[in-house]
Image (cartoon, rainbow, N blue to C red; front, side, top):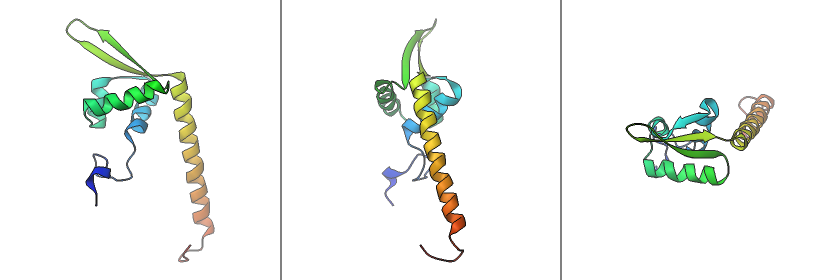
Length: 112
């Protein structure tokens, strides 16, 4: 099997990086870049690429804050980002509901 299509944990069906970013931001509202990088087990360049795509879409804002010893990059989900993520989750739940309904209607042992 092609290894480059797998997520870091080896699951080929694992969530995409932008979706994982949005999930973490939706539940936490704001997260430091370094924390996102560690949680998502990705490289700074890969994370930066996806964050800038999300920012361009208006889903996140990226702010640099100066602290006494070093700068910190803070990623914040926008209202548009919250709405988009919630809509995505609702659509996914609808699909799962249809699958569950179809599974209940299909007699056990029959092939579709």
